[in-house]
Image 1 (cartoon, rainbow, N blue to C red):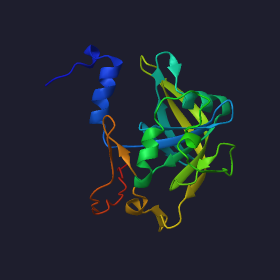
Image 2: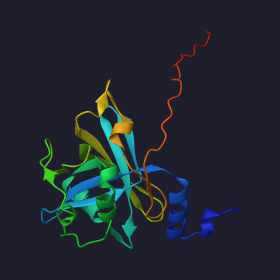
Image 3: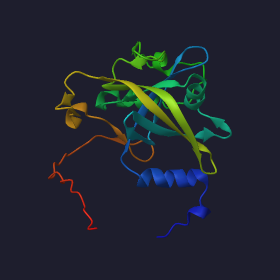
Image 4: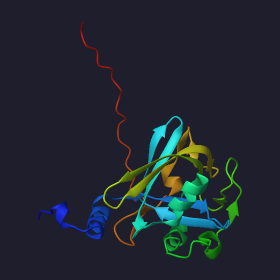
Length: 206
């Protein structure tokens, strides 16, 4: 089978790519609306982009000509919190993707407790094992649909006690969830540890 992407609509391409690029980590993002409500939404086009200062990025699409509430809120206030959800939060994370009016707080609607952040005014979720307070640093637009890739500097990281060992997150203990195609999610499954690759320096003769 061969697919010519130029023959696909944006929606058809999205459905195909989200089944190819799997599994995808999920940024569960809280923002403040214009009325002060805590908006909450998941985004599975998510990665870290720099270690020093730490920066993470995720892509926000549009519905027709309108960007999602998260993008508008971030561009207005320039602050937000990126959470990592674990297995126990799979249902509320999925339900927070439901489209509601901008003034509706998904956190309140789903009964999720929030806590004050340390560096920004946007609250964080009490139940999330990891929460990263972020300040917007860069916005890039891509493609005909003008999807926005939002890059934020991480100002503070909140980590549940017991998750960090020797300076690293214990992935099995974190038990994060990831996104597949459609309304499908997965957990880590089997974890295999392979031999660490040694860093070698290449020297060239003068």
